[in-house]
Length: 470
Image (tube, rainbow, N blue to C red; front, top):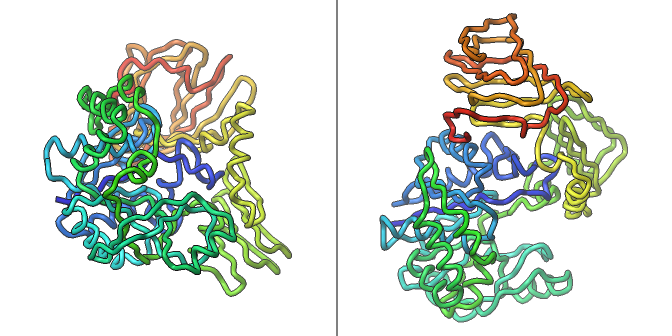
């Protein structure tokens, strides 16, 4: 049986400022109404004889994964939480251990969560061909037939034919310079390494035993000591930390003698930069891609993405990327957007937060938007979903005022429980045990004014939490 495994651990820093650590690119809607993660889930759900997807993600994104699976009506084959990033090979091993426990003959279709595929019929055909090779104990990579000389991808050189449109892998090649990439394109025997794979779970574990035994042992111990937490599988942190950090390419595919490649042309992109998004997006007659409230004069070859907070106007510019969010704006030449990561590195070095969080932060109960702040105050717009509740908590350094804008909130404050209706307000003293709950069928919206000597999110002592965050 075919089991999709969706790897969703990336941070997507090259799409900053839209993609951030707490909301990376796989969970963003970049090419339509669905996020890239949801498009991946929907795409694999259309394959024949397929089981619900297994997702491997970080603990910080677990509720987002669950919510987005529900958003496309997908069953959950398991959400495995990585305690820390250890690259793709250990993540896939966790999924393999999870699946062989219930299906010893499980076949894994390993997919990054943040890729775009436009020709889904070609993708399904490639999966069918790769599945035949996997039954013959090949570990199959999907190679994308290049249509231009790309220096940002690794390449695969194909060797002898194996049938089913597949080939033995002669060798993997690191990202080349432009002259080498042009030669690869002309020779016609090279494909881009897509990061997508198909193989039997047990075969993958056998290869780890041969080529990465420490990784096999660490992931085995981590999964054996895993604990269920709501809809999630929390693997053992100490055991997983002992695993070497390595990609599947280095740990297995470059060492095994059973590596195969199925070349495919399926309109694939890893959306690895703003320029690659411009390349695959629909553009106007001047080569521009506009999103949001944009007015332009004599603008060409540009991507301009406005936030819902303000308009962007451009005059006489060419080949620019302009991306606006409520708290940060990027302006870059289109041929320099690969350097966006340097901005993220500068933010990290300066101890800033703009690479970690948007101004609007999503939580399992809803969201909050920090609309104003000063030295001893902060103002948030909070939205609580129907049936949801914040944790029962207290603060050591701040007091809060709550004003309900819409809906009815149930408020707990120390030994009192009462309803707060539209246009009503209450005061939560410093140190009081409190909770906000929405028992209604419509969202509750309120304004929260915090005041005190310290207003950080880590000034929360959770005493009880329906989401297991206590």
